Length: 215
Image (cartoon, rainbow, N blue to C red; front, side):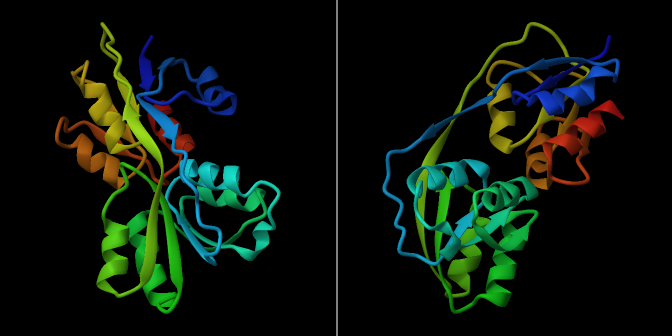
């Protein structure tokens, strides 16, 4: 049986996709998330989120508060869904941080923003805002730590969801002849340093990565 390794523990609904595929699935978390004990300023109108982890940190601090007054700007459909499920108003959603930054520059040039992020956040968004004189403050609300694990075997396919996940996997393993399935262009760019057998998801969702692997 061909076997795929997921570098993220999947939800039961995501695993369902694999059940009838005839593929074996091995999964683990290549990354560990630690939330920081920081006070998030709640006197800002506009909040930027590039991950669900940043949203989780924010929601933890606004429990019981009236959240409909906050405007949010985010990367990814799943992040948008999480914000909306919790009563937050999503003004802009983009598929990646660079696209979100361009939308903010184009449509919200005179606003002030609070960017909630992790320690591995990429530079494109803050650089775009700085270059265009958009006022923002950055608060690190979580840390992503590598969580390496050695596998004494090869996999036909490996699912990657971030550049950090690739770096974590490679601390104890090599790519061998595996096909690498990547959630987006940023992850695929990192993967290309180590392999030519790369397939990038059509949409930056975990489900789409799984569908590509099953195909």
